[in-house]
Each structure stands twice: as C-alpha cells, then as structure tokens.
Amino acid sequence: MNHFDYVRPASVSEAVAAASQPGAAYLAAGTNLLDLMKGGISRPSRLVDVTRLPGLDGIDHLPDGGIRIGALVRNADLAHDPDFVSAYPAIAEALLSGASAQLRNAATVGGNLLQRTRCGYFYDTASACNKRQPGSGCDARDGESRLHAVLGWSPSCIATNPSDFCVPLVALDAVVEIEGRAGRREMALDALHRLPGDQPERDSLLDPGDLITAVRLPAAARGFAAHARYLKLRERTSYAFAMVSAAAGLRIDNGTISEARLALGGVAAKPWRARPAETILVGCRPDATAFRRAAEAALASAQPSGDNLFKIELAKRIAVRALTLAAAGTPARMAALPASPFASATGARHDA
Amino acid sequence: MKLSIGLIVNGAKTEVELDDPRVTLLDLLRERLYLTGTKKGCDRGQCGACTVIVDGRRINSCLALAVSLDGAEVLTIEGVAVGGRLHAVQAAFIAHDGLQCGFCTPGQIMSAIGLIQEGQAGDDPERIREGMSGNLCRCAAYAGITEAVLDAQKTLHEANQRRSA
Image 1 (tube, chains in turn cyan, red):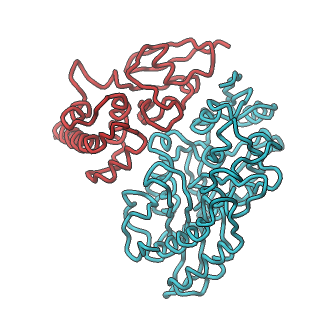
Image 2: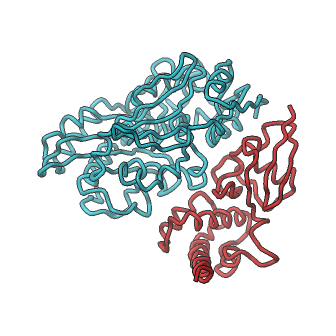
Image 3: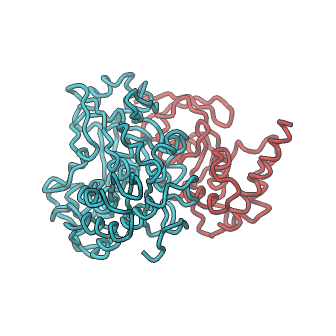
C-alpha cells in the first residue's frame, strides 16, 4: 500500500475542500478501497475520512412520501430496517444478496454506489487495463471474459458494475444527492454511472471533491412493494458477485400490469434500466408470453464482448424469472438465500 | 505523521501511537497489542479469518483502518471467555467438531457470536449457512460449524430466558 495523508474533516464542506486536491480519495468503511490500495490498483495520496461527518447516517421519511437514505447508513442496517424492507423489498433482497455479513455490517450506502468493477484484469496490475491505466489496452478482450459485459461496452473496456444494490435502485428511479465544490446538486442514479466509451477510467459523472451525501427514492417507488423481487445468478450460492441479476417491480390492477420496472445487473458498466421492456409490459396480463417479449426487448441491443454469448440468453431468462416471481407476489418473509434462484417460490419455473 | 488513537479492546482501555495511518485493525491487534488469536488469512476481506466485533458488529478487521476506528470498542477471541469459562459458542465448536486445523476458528467463532446477536437466522440451518458464508474453512468443517452455531444459539437463548425469568 502506498503512503498517504489521513485527514478527518468535521463538516461536509471541509471534506469537499480536502478531497478536491489532486490524488485525494474519500474513505468510508474502506471495504473496497483498502482492497484496491493493498493491490496497488488505487494509490491515493490523501484519504479523507468521512465516517464521522454529522447527519449522513439517517433514514428519513420525507413529507412527499419519499425516503432519504444517508450515505453513511450501513448496508446491513438498511437491509434490516423493518419499514424499509416492507416498502422496498427488492432493494433489501439485493442488499442481502451482496458480499458477506461482515462486509454488509461495514459497507456504506455511498460506498456501495461507488465500488469499482471486479474485472480480474482491472485487479491484476500485470495486465493491460484501460480503466486502471488509460491507453494500456484491455487484456479482458482476449482473456477470461465469461463474466463481462454484453450491453453498453466499448472496445476499450468490457467490465461490469458489481453492485446489487444499484439494480433495484435504478429500477425505482433513485436520485443521488451530491455535495461538491459548487455546492449541492442531485442527479438520477441512472445518470451517475458512465458507459466506458473511450474513457473507461471514469466510472461516474462525479467531479473531484464530489461527495455523495444521500440516496433518495420517490414516493412512487413504494407502489411496487407487493410485487417486487431481485434475482441474482452467481457461480456459488452465497458471497459472490452476479453473473446476471434482475430487479423487477410490477403494479397489477384487475389482472393487468399497470406499471412495470425492470433493471439488469452484471451485464454492463452501469446498472441497466430496461425501459423498452417496461413499456411493452404495461397493459399486458402478467404471463410468460409478455415476460419473454419484455426480456427480448431488454436485451435487443446485447452483443457478446468475448466468451460470453451465453449471458444474453441467460439474462433474458433471469429477467423472465424475476418478473414471474414479482407477479406471484413479494413473499412475506425474506428467503433464506436472498435473491437465489435455488430458493423455492410459488409460480417460478425452475427450468427457466 | 504521529496518530494517537484510543480503543477499548476486550474491555480494557488501550492507547496506541501509530506512526503510519496504513495500519489495519488486524495488524494493530496482532503486531502492536500481541493479540494473535485473530488470524490473517487472505488480508483482502474474502476469508473471514480476521473477523472481530467492533461496536457490536462483526467486521473484517483486515479491511478497517485502525485510525478510522478511534474510540471504538473491539471484542476479539481473547475476550469472549469469562473467568476461564468458555463462551457458549466456543464450547459448542468443541462439542460438534466445528473445526479441524483450527486456523479459521477464531474468525468463525467471532462471526457466529455476531450472527447470533444479529438475531436474523432463527433455527434454520440454511439461514445459518448463509449468515456464515463470509467465513471460509478449507478443512470444510462446515457441517459441524452449522451444528455448533445452532446449538450455541439455543444455549444462549435458554440462558437469556432464565435470566429474564
């Protein structure tokens, strides 16, 4: 690990000023950052510890029916908050399907949003990686690429965003509150993460010094609570990143879908909101035919980036399965294995 | 850069002078306080051998900077037995053969204590396995570990009921 200065600012404005210096990085729990620093992938010259900043660790219900989640709320605390679980069950399920209990106890909401890709070539400093070292090339293209992107990738980078949390958040129109050098602003979570293009080193639209202070969900996000699921396929049943995941939310009135939300994880450099699929579903009966049509639309522009053609059909099936589970209704109790396709559930086809 | 931090480790107030902010909680426990029960396995947050309880929550001590935890209360494997009497989770690991080589065991035990305190698993072995998935055991003593956690949870629950009765 490289040497760095450590500062612990007392206020958000002090933090922004301290982190606006070149080479500075924010430190929250550090569960991803310290790993990156130990591997020499990130080499910040200054760590700005935000863990003591006041006012960033609350879950606040807003007068308009929305909710604001402070950036320092720990992943486990959010996932086990009874009000939050009943209003946003797919988000809780996604959180509990990620990492391990120890990591969820430490990792923060803001840190989850800004975690870096787990592409093996990004982590291996002996490999060429345009995200780690711009212009060096991409060894993933001719390497082990089974887990890489099938949507929105570019010849310079085929890495995926590893967050589970972001997938239902983006489906439910989450908004990110940011404090920066020019003051406070906000942006849709869907706009926060970038596709690689020819600048894969930039994961997000944040500028130096920008600090995520909260994530907000609009009142309408609660409307999907009765029919919301997150489903995650991975190479082992627990404590693994998604190969493909899907967050589905439905509003069903008189046997017809009146509103639909679908987002995919593990397929692109950002959580992938599938709006064309949502449009198709409105007015349909919640059945296998409609779900398959929606899944086809969600993956219409998908292309293999390497040895991962199978992920396109897999993503369609996971989308169909997530929609089927959502239509069957949110279970009263979280499955023992959150988001696992191996958990039994009424209405789900286990061969899908 | 001198950094002075205070921790409460296994109930005892401890002041540590750090000459470098890079020290993790794991390295502080092992190399400065000589509490070597907490193990360094992968040092990257993947194996769980370094699990300790900080302010009531189980975390990977290898991925926590000590300087950031100034003022925290830390419980390690050295602090769980009281007056020479094993903690219920320790006793259950012995009774159920929840170990073979023993390297992962301190982390397993700290993680199990955390899991039981979190109160999420109930008596469902599948929930116990999911709740313990952050602790790898390369001897694969998982069956015994799951039994031990279930048994210890029952023992602790019964003890709590007796206390409140």
